[in-house]
Image: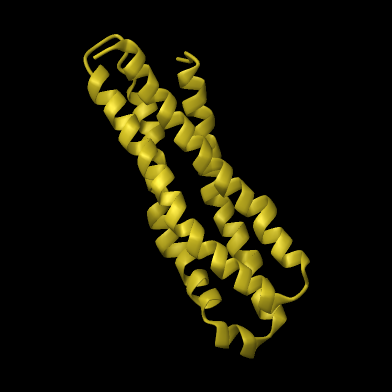
Length: 159
């Protein structure tokens, strides 16, 4: 296998991690705050729901692509001087967010998806859920950004 192809796998994995991290960061710093700033919590919840539906399809694809390319890079370099197990771990680290998502974010997702309950409870209830969701999603964002930064460091030749 050519060195440039193998290096390209590492570049691809890092790029996918960067896109995933950027998407997560955008959600936390732009999308949810903009929805909260609108003041109309019914519209904010509806926007969140639409965005969440779209992003819950796109983000796993980005992360999955990083895992596949990171794993391919490792398998092709295993046992050579280019083997980079720490880089593989960075590619896989985002998988740690799945149990967190299921245990911590999904209950809030389910509450926000219940349009009737949000209407019944009122704007303060919906605002609180959106704020809590954004804070809890921030944990995933920190993991994604940290993982991307480490992968970029390793891509640049960091030990």
